Image (cartoon, rainbow, N blue to C red):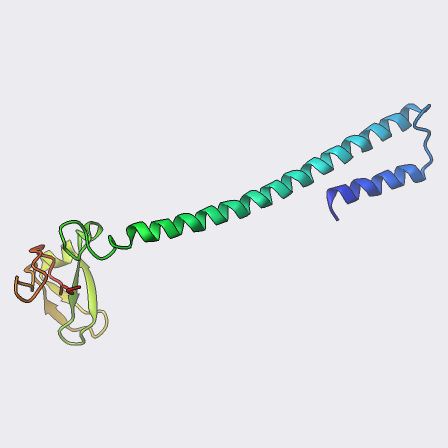
Length: 153
């Protein structure tokens, strides 16, 4: 039951009491209170409708913005400005492949400095270094020192 329906029910109850709203002070008071409740109920319903409409419009704007961001930033996902395939956000993380199970692993700079890593997949230990496996002929030639295989595009 909505607020306006509840106020209409109260108005019906008051009418059913047959209170004289012209001469009786109590009747006048009840009549004014019910009128105010009616106005408040209609205002609240209008606010709820406006809020719903604004929410739908905001969702549409958000979807449009996501489409624009996808168009603007899709090229930046794979490469940054200097052509390196490891982005600026990944400066402290490196990708290596386990020589035993070929599982790709992402490690941070601390693990790289330690020089040894245990694969969480096959539990074999192997040495890692910060030397880039690529050279100008076979790899991307970025000289980033990231230690992961570079995919040419």
